[in-house]
Image (cartoon, rainbow, N blue to C red):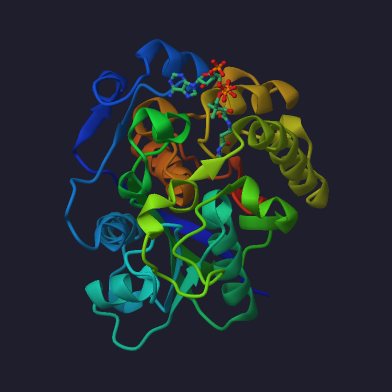
Length: 334
Ligand code: UT7
């Protein structure tokens, strides 16, 4: 029997810090509103007009993850890359990273599951390793979101929430049952696709790009029914954690740390309350980065790694919820 385990994690965020006070200067918002409603104090935006930034951030994060795992790109068999903000319309950013890492003809798989993308990617990589097809996979979540945001008062409901960043994990084959990725559970509910989306460019129209498209702000800018998303997020993330624990015959009290997708500090706090977890068993960093979508979970793990808080034998739950809707959980015995 084969199993998979994470042997290294890394992250990269742009050095360009954008505070709530910076946003106050370009839209009708306040630091107080943003902090009270979301917990966010600042986020990172990749500097404008730098091309290839989603793959570039993934590259930097991957180098750190591989160095911590003690491997090089030559040792990696495949890439699974999660993003909603790929560098090109097509191909996905996976192949761009594959080229940056000089990985010859090794495969790169792109995953589009938005905020749940990293857990979906982890699950796909875990299956490849369990079947024995691959021994070592780079699992990535990376996002450049600032260029898709309407950073005016019209777009403030979403513009203040998101940030840029990338994270990566090296997933390796091992044979010790009960260690590493214990399980992953994935869900989606496509009837809510229009609740949180950017509609264009897309093939739902006669052409992908058409005259006058840029005036259609409701279609090319992100749209979200925030309160509906909020309600579903606080229902689905605890559900997914409980599903993972039950599947492994474990209890909430067995959990050493919950890493929730960073969409809103109030969502994380509600999930914590619903699961009755003490403060030391949950880790949030949305205050510094905003919502980096597929990158939030590997960034959380990488920061914990740097703080020496990833410990052998401890039990970690990852959970995420987002556009699609998609939601997921992963249980990891490190
Ligand atoms: O990653 C997964 C996807 N995303 C999420 O999970 C996000 C889920 N939703 C949320 O986090 C929250 O719904 C938001 C943070 C997006 C919004 O918080 P809210 O408490 O639901 O506020 P709201 O949308 O009900 O807006 C309240 C008021 C409105 O004004 P009126 O109508 O009461 O006069 C908005 O126009 O706040 C106004 N508002 C703002 N004011 C200042 C909305 N955005 C802003 C802003 N600054 N940036």
